[in-house]
Image 1: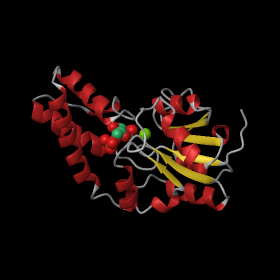
Image 2: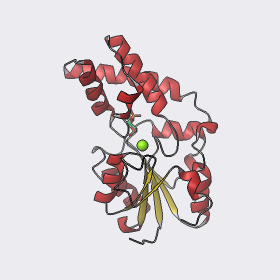
Image 3: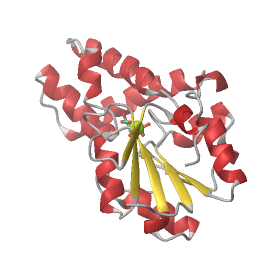
Image 4: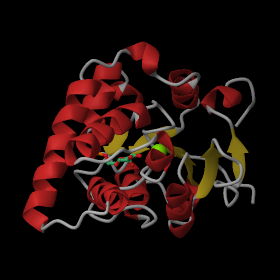
Length: 214
Ligand code: G6P
Ligand code: MG
């Protein structure tokens, strides 16, 4: 389907920056403390998944069943470590082409938004020095339903005051592509052509869009 793009909504982790490695370090540290291992392959299952659900998957891998109070303590401990890691991030960690593509869209009058499940998104944008590249930031502090629910993207469209059908979502997670489709938005998949096959277009990274007119 050919659409006019009046607004572009970007996922953060895996699209603008590779924070998966920091999530991995923090989850692995927690798993090791609990007495089991957590591999990079296991970590693939956590991409685009909320913090609470990520912990549940981790505990499943370790074969542990814990009460809710303990689970929220563990999620908080993981987040403290994660925040420690991302506090040292620098602008060179922005994925290739991401800042340039955002600037290019803005110079053409296209609105830009962040649509991320992460509650740490504002800290990451600030550390990378790219907060001003987004007209609107919708993160895990503003929404309660995780992707594939379309809430995060619909909220971004609403704050931008642009109809969903004129928004295009840029996502690296299958659940995010599904969320874009539930929102009635176009979906550009970034990364794996197999897991992202439901996307309207698949590209390896935002750098691929710098030279073309999209
Ligand atoms: C993104 C990441 C997930 C992460 C989630 C919540 O969707 O892809 O791996 O679990 O955000 O992030 P947070 O920073 O709030 O724990
Ligand atoms: Mg992502």
